[in-house]
Image 1: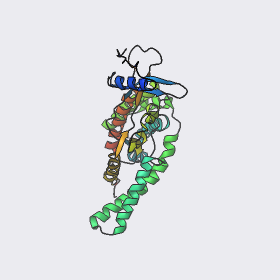
Image 2: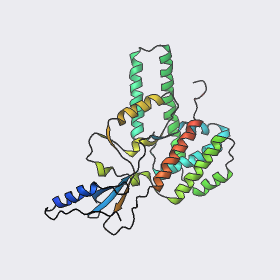
Image 3: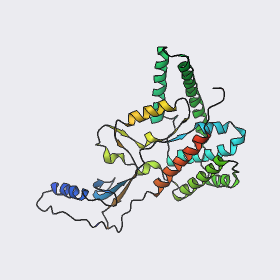
Image 4: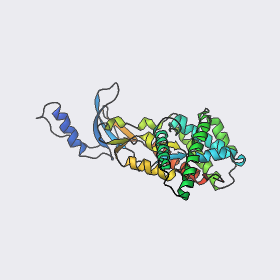
Amino acid sequence: MHQWQAPDVSGLPFPQNVSAILEKLSAQRFDGASVMLLQDLGYPARLATVKTYNTGHCLYYIPVRPFWQMKNEPSKQACFELTRTLFAYLYQIAGVPYFREPGYLDNTYDSLENWISEVDDNGNEDEEEEIFRKRQFAEFELLKQAGDLLLPDIKKPLDLALWENQLQTFAATDKHGKDLREVAYEFLKLVKDYPSRAIKESMHYELYEGEENYQIYWENYISFYWSGRDALESMLYDMVNNEFQEAGYQEEPIAVQWFDSPQDVPRHDFDFENRLFFLLDELTGILNELDHEEPNR
């Protein structure tokens, strides 16, 4: 399949002969994949090719504040229900973490709030900075209250028949509504093709456990969060980006092809990942456009 050129290691004892074979094979590229000797649970060590999906080192943070705003706007109830269904899929099946449950972004928001509190305690701000700081504290209170109230909504059981009915009856009155319906339709096609597929299934950080420095796990860059257009957004992204810059490795989806049996063609299938990451980006863009500052804040 790959037209491998097996090196002559007849003069080397075990395990040096295995190491020499892997070293020479690794110098060859196979459909963009790397050659490894891996041991899966319950199986002996086997030769495999490993290909990594490139996420582009992007943050896939899904804003929840526009979802909260829909919930409280009577004319947006259809958008709210359709978005709730999308969020239910992402949370319950795809496994996207939620920022009000223990995890990376929950800790990051806590650190950010503590840091802002320390700055506020210094008392060296001018009037404009003081006003902005009050907006930030108000945002923290809202994200906690609203975030906790919305979690039961996205924990409601996912119903594909209801999802299809929502799409059939959804009356889009503007571009945002049309875009939301389109991305919801594509997500429905994805879940029908991969009914129980979760993001974590193609993540294999254990292959790189020996890497030095801090590691960025998938839960760190894929998550629900509060908002990308609030008084906290700039400081939140600065904190996340500064931390990620210290990382030596980022966990990304991996496809493994085993060679303990004959293989006809290279098979490193990223159809699920290609579609999911594209749709996450599309959904985030739509929600960002719907996200707005509350009046009189």
